[in-house]
Amino acid sequence: MSMEFQKKLAGAQTPIPGVVIYDLPVYGDNRGWFKENWQREKMVAAGLPDFGPVQNNISFNDKAGTTRGIHAEPWDKFVSVATGRIFGAWVDLREGPSFGAVFTAELDASKAIFIPRGVANSYQTLEDNTSYVYLVNDHWSPDAEYTFLNLADETVDIPWPVPLSEAEVSDKDLGHPRLADVKPMGPRKTLVLGADGQLGRALRKAYDGDASVEFAGRQDFDLLDPASYTARHWGNYSTIINAAAYTAVDAAETGPGREAAWAINATAVSRLARIAAEHSLTLVHVSSDYVFDGTRTEHTEDEPFTPLGVYGQSKAAGDAIVSTVPRHYIVRTSWVIGEGNNFVRTMAGLAGRGVQPAVVDDQIGRLTFATDIADGIKHLLGSNAPFGTYNLSNDGSPQSWAEIAADVYELSGAERSVVSGVSTAEYFKDKAAAPRPLNSVLDLGKIKATGFRPRNSKTALAQYLSASQATV
Image (cartoon, rainbow, N blue to C red; front, side, top):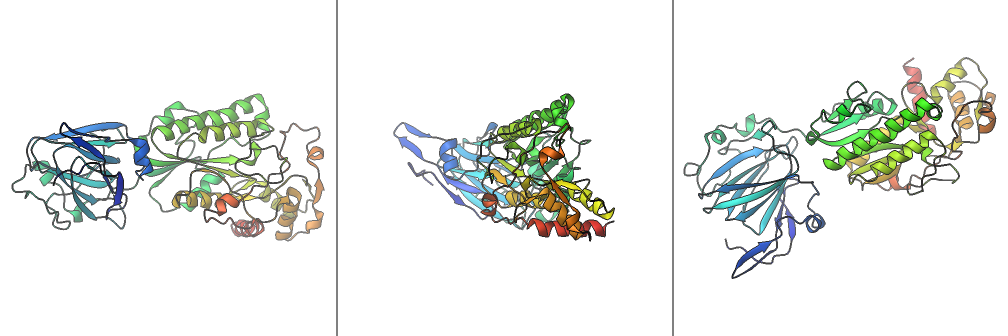
């Protein structure tokens, strides 16, 4: 096979999902040839995943017929030939429906191939003095977990140009298991932080049974302890969902509260953002309507930050930090209701005791049930929606807190008319309280455009109370 010069950079899909073979432009004349073996801007534009290589390795073989593999490694690779020619064989050893899929091709200096984590690769040299180069996005370690397949496996039946009986092969490679005995390589994991909070518990239910999702409460991952960020091998992860936050709005106005709010909502977030950027992870971060002052009738994702208090300021800082991560989703919510103590449960309890409450009636917004946030996050990740910021609350007509309280009373069998309204200024008169946005209505058009439809807030409220009463 003679090498073709000046081909156009282009990728072609193979039978193995995620494995893409590329034609590389090679420029040659009587002196030899030159190529851009790795050119990030051009290759990403041509469809190559921006997989963040951190190490460049070279393998040299002095004899034709030298055969290596079949090894599935816990990182992504981009392989190209420097000199000579190779026959490559790739077998999907990942969990899933494509397990056992095979692709083979000859590579010279004008070809390259991208191999995702868990796809096994093997190379047989077709010429003497052959060398090939590979970029990887994790540092090589002798302790790394590999998955192997026997070179002579009858199931995949690789058509080696040089029969294995005549090839240079290591005894170790000949001793690897057949396909029926291979343990598939699991996917990279998703780490959920703040897994014991309202949203964390909803995410546990949303991902119930998914072994690739790992949940960490405060005892498992202390956001305030720098050691937490270095204790994991981040190459084993693809995604971090940060469901942890400091949310004590009024306490944040005190000295200790201000320090805690900034430590958790900004400093810890900056550490997570750095990890995500360095390891090409997707970072999901939950934001708040408190990053706005509430003077607009509806808040879009691109509205400038105008926080009124310390809590909102610390959340806005976290949002700004996360927005610098190449792969990020900022999910902005309002008036979150989940398991544990919350406004809805409080009103239901008052209704049961016959209390006639005065509730704020000049703050307008929509409830956001934690189950809908969890479902929205799962949708964004599962649908490969464009990275960026997404508003996510429940849908329906905006309401005041007093109107929601009246709905709770009615659904609890009490008279809605016993709930009276009071202004924010009156309610917090002579109390130490943080300033609050009066309008927290979020525009949901962007997340709806991805195919996600939040539940109507009244429907979600009725279902929430029905489930709560069923567990009492």
